[in-house]
Length: 188
Ligand SMILES: [Zn+2]
Image (tube, rainbow, N blue to C red):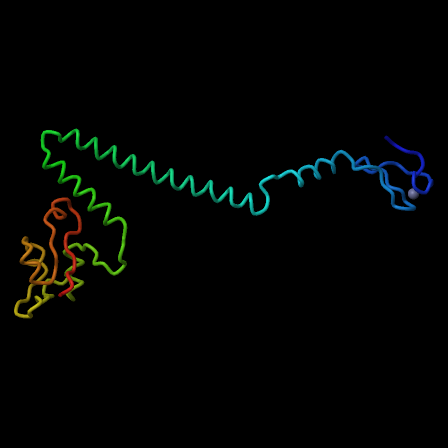
C-alpha cells in the first residue's frame, strides 16, 4: 500500500524504491519490509541446523556413513570369502588356505607398525643388502660373512634356508603368486 504522506512527520512521500518500499526523505521512516527483503529475512532466520547443533548433526551423519561404508566393505569381503568357499567345497584344505591368505592380505593391508619389514622383490632385497642387481659383478655377503653371491644366483635361490642365510624370510606362496616374497628378519 502506497502512502501520500509520511505517517510519522506528515511530509509528502515520493515514489517507492525498486524494492517497493517507501522511504521518507525527511525523517527516514520507511514502509514495512518489502516482499524481497521479507524473504531474505525469513531465509536467514530459517536454517534450523545452523550453529553447533547443525555441526554435530553433520558430524554424526559423516560418522554414520563411514561406519556403514566399513560395514558394507566387510559384508562384501565376507560374501566373497563365502563364495570362494562354496567353489572349493570339495577341498576344505584349500578353503582354509584361501582364508589364511585373505587374512594375511588383509593384515598386510593394514600397517600396524611403520617399522615392520616390507616384502621385497629379489631385486629390492639384493639392493637392501647392499648389492646392485643391475651389475652382474655386484655381490652381497651372507650374515656370517663367509659366502658371497651375485644377483643371478641370488634370485634363483629357492629355499627358505638359503635366504635365511642372508637374513631374509622367504615365502614360496608369495613367489608363486608373483608377489614380493622376501623380507628382512631382524637378527634376535
Ligand atoms: Zn517523515
